[in-house]
Amino acid sequence: MSVLVLAESPKGKFKKAAFELVHYGHLIAKNIGGECTVLVLGSANDVSSLGTYGASKVIHLNDPSFDDLDSINHTTAITNIAKDLGSTVVILSHSSTGKALIGGLSVTLNAGAVSGVNSLPTTDGGFRVKKNVFAGKAIAEVQIDTDIKVMSLMGNSIPPQEVGGPAAVEVRTLDLPAAKNIVTGQNTVDGIVPLPEAELVVSAGRGMKGPENWGIIEDLANILGATTACSRPVADTGWRPHHEHVGQTGVAIRPNLYIAAGISGAIQHLAGVNSSKTIVVINKDPEAPFFKAADYGVCADLFDVVPALTASLKKFKESN
Image 1 (cartoon, rainbow, N blue to C red):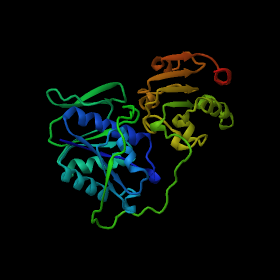
Image 2: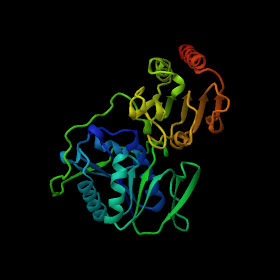
Image 3: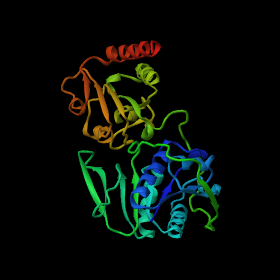
Image 4: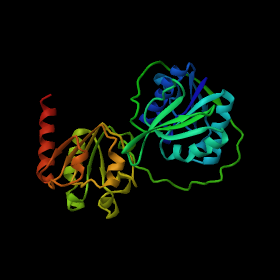
């Protein structure tokens, strides 16, 4: 039995999400008695390093036409490789790319598909995976009965671990038609850990009163090495860029630590952050709904608490 993992390489580089995915595939392959093969589409550096996280082999379609997503050609390429290998499990990242591909792969491979899984499958008496449903208020266990299974993995679900060394790389080519979608430009954010991959997130809402006060949030994030985020009203009013918006209509995240300052905790926001391992809420309103979801709560003015927290962390770091 074979597990096929699609490792994304934006701008030719692998990120944490790719390493998580490879290790996840390795663990599944180990469980079902097969091998984990990783597929890389387009430009990528240091491809053999994916073996460190459990890839038995890496197949690299080193064609620049794959650098921009074309769902038809990407689906065709993955389908061809999966059929050639006889893969019974195909794993994608629950990213914009994975979301664009999972439906098509389900059709071309005649496979059952489950998006947004967050744990290793159980294989005793059937192949079952778990995912959050109803805006994170419940966990569904889904059994996939088809011969081939396709899944997308939520970020920060499986910590990547180094279990091997460099993998053998097989460079292949496929004769595919010209892409029907032409990408004329991309606006991306560099220099920060993307929210879906961030282990530490500091977020704020309308309680900040205005964009001119955001410096105290950035100071706290910097001392923690965290990524900044915001609630939807903040992004909609232009206080912060939309890529920082977390929630049901924004980015869903699963960090180890989520600090929310000045956010009331509406259900739409909670839906995107309630999978965080630890939630700390800072709000002066004792009736704020967020306190019900918090692991730790500070009922006080954020303009007093956040700078004091930053100062304490700085002092701690300087003395340790």
